[in-house]
Image (cartoon, rainbow, N blue to C red; front, side, top):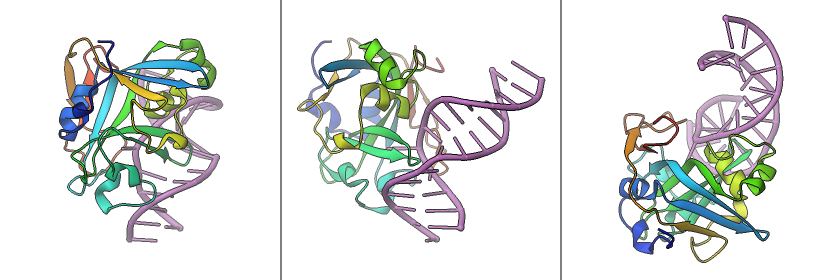
Length: 186
DNA sequence: ATAGCGATGTTCT
DNA sequence: GAACATCGCTATA
């Protein structure tokens, strides 16, 4: 429960990894300040076979990390303004990632509130989650667990609901958004 | 509670 | 030029 997620947790398919990440905790230690978020909302993104994925059209400077090894971070700028973070999923050579969409701040609430500029809605969205953790493009491509960003395993698997992904227009029939039982929509 | 809208970097047509 | 894996403000109910 207090142990880091083993690397092989990231080496299977994107849907399996997405479900595996719910209930786990993302922890950042940036500027001597620690913030932890327990994940309750994630989305799976595939490679060329997933029209909604950034990797669908092949490698670009932005999505380069998606083509890297499992367990790397893929951080991109959304709508020119916000940062969004993904965990890169294996197998190596295949692009895939899990977008960390939301969770509950369970450590460093004051730090998170400081970064967010408010006391509520600290991490209930991908851009907010990154801001609360202090994650930016500077962390793109970093390996999880070896740098300022780590993921701590959960005690047990939560109940999980699946829905279509949010904010996309392609492949809306795929229910690749996963929400923990005590999460946003129940 | 829900709806409309502006901000704006990267990618694509 | 337009779309986009978003967010917070503003208006209306």
